[in-house]
Length: 385
Ligand SMILES: CC(C)(COP(=O)([O-])OP(=O)([O-])OC[C@H]1O[C@@H](n2cnc3c(N)ncnc32)[C@H](O)[C@@H]1OP(=O)([O-])[O-])[C@@H](O)C(=O)NCCC(=O)NCCSC(=O)C[C@@](C)(O)CC(=O)[O-]
Image (cartoon, rainbow, N blue to C red; front, top):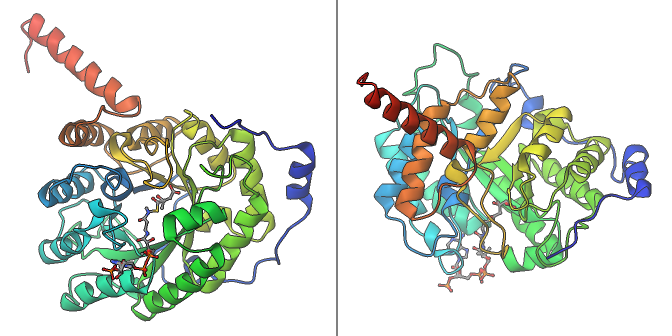
């Protein structure tokens, strides 16, 4: 097992005092007047990655109908941003090979929800983006383009057309970039620059992941936070609308999460507006790291229902932090997620059953057990209802 490294005093001091990249020279969507980025101070956005990150590693093919039902159940439970698939090579990640059908279904049939939805799809190159755009062009009236988005309000009907987002994924280490994308970081940035430009031409929002920011399965835990900050500024400079920082291996600790976010802040990245955190719970640190990120102003977190997930190119990494755990934790702090915790716990129980995995995380299991105990007690006392 890799040894976990705490930041040295010297490195922490560097992060506090020495920006390693030029101060901010990029504009993101939240700078512009698109209106969709406003947020209330106690609101935290949850990006549900279960249908993509949660399922991509499953060896058994999950039927298309199950994937679509998962997305629909998540939307009903109040999750408004859902990563629904990936336009990646089917040779590399076979489980995502029916993402075209998923996108087509979402556009053709709509998805009932209480609030407007955003669906996100990964695209590692222009081939993936072109496949997504070819489908979108067949249903031009079925989705909301980025420039047409309006701020969510109580009056916006849940049946409003969904918005579509493209997600690219860079890596903070060369080894992971080669394993995940079959190319160097520099070559991946050249590809992503083309994907971002083409997505912007199509009026689509772009989210940029950076993987292994707090530990790499091949290079160990000591990933340079300045390198992550430099990548983030480069991707934002290319036009990415937001950055999601992936603790792919779950090696992240509270001090190193703080160090990373301080570095990004010092590099000119607006951590509160433009950064999401994507924690895996392999070492049980995801919620502690979430608390640290909240303190640094982060208001967007990725999670996976039932704690499903793991990256095919990160051996040993367990699931993403469970959506149920994140929602329970955030709401206990008085933050608003808009997610119905009981409903999402039921979705977690259902999908882990379908996939044949134990229900990950703690809160979902605890809630369902408490509910079963309550039912048993009522039935025992004759007070069935
Ligand atoms: C990037 C490539 C394609 C390079 O893979 P390559 O083999 O170098 O690409 P290539 O250009 O030589 O193409 C090889 C074959 O793939 C096809 N191909 C090429 N591109 C596509 C495409 N977009 N869609 C469909 N097919 C594609 C292409 O047409 C060709 O087909 P052939 O001629 O052999 O029949 C490959 O490495 C790949 O697909 N990688 C994706 C890996 C992946 O999906 N990883 C998991 C997602 S990232 C993640 O989980 C981390 C994250 C985001 O959750 C955050 C975190 O936790 O850190």
